[in-house]
Image 1 (cartoon, rainbow, N blue to C red):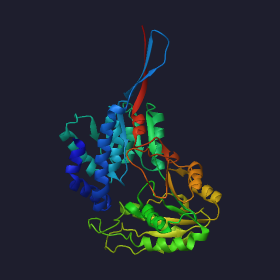
Image 2: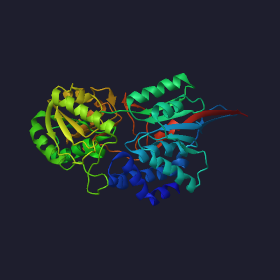
Image 3: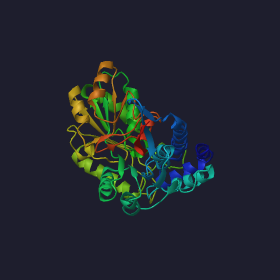
Image 4: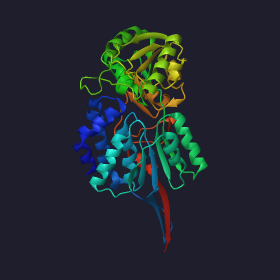
Length: 408
């Protein structure tokens, strides 16, 4: 019923996220709200597929392994997909029988508050889903340190994720599940005959949602003998991602979430112009007195060592990194502190299988970018965090195993 109510209120929820974040109302309407509803529906349908177990024993013994709720879950979610990221935590936590305290990002509380109203309307008992807006250093910290919260699921920066590990150690040793930063590689090999498509999706992977995506394919590794051809295609595709009014259905991307964040992204761009080669800077949206619009920008970093190639910018910025051999691509792809997602383009099936073992990320897309669904786990390694959202595996984060042994 709640899943249907989300769709019944699709217009309102889309506009709330658009107004809070600056992302386009079209993206909210087409992707975010339907995806939120679908994940909740899928999780509800999965409840009776979560089965307990019977372990082998000797005669006159019965050993049962039960999956039990943890209790109270603290869910702390980011501002880039306010409604959608909330449901990535809420759906499996509620489906496994827990109560949840949801802290939306301070920049984007509106859709979460509306979702709580819809949950009451759908018949969820009061107190099962609680939305608690507030600042991270106050409300988020209080959730992390609270001795009656049994688990915290967090999506956000690596820096803040480490705070939650500290909070757990200082309080009740609650479970912490983290989905943190990323610097995803997108590797284009000369064996790929789909350069047009690779360029189109490279632009999508770097600029969609204003580049404010944890798994954004922000590092584009291109084999040197196809570099010039690929760059021509990429520049052409970049002009399809010009910023515009978020409320205009024709806009492909909107503005960044706050002026503070926009200044941070612009500082990365300014530094990169001093350290690397500026390949392309698209035309920006001209709106006087609004400082949150940032045009898609592309740099070349042949060393793969500059700040722009290693830090998570969280804006519409791509770095192109040339490479010669397969082993160079592997080394560069694995060469940051993050290991969330990645993509590679090749028509060589053996190469695809080989590199699927060598590229150290939680989700690898081959001949596409950022492929996932409700049925596939999403999570990373290294300083991108641990634990998985989506799929039946996400239910494990919010369940404990309890052994019950009966002797006859």
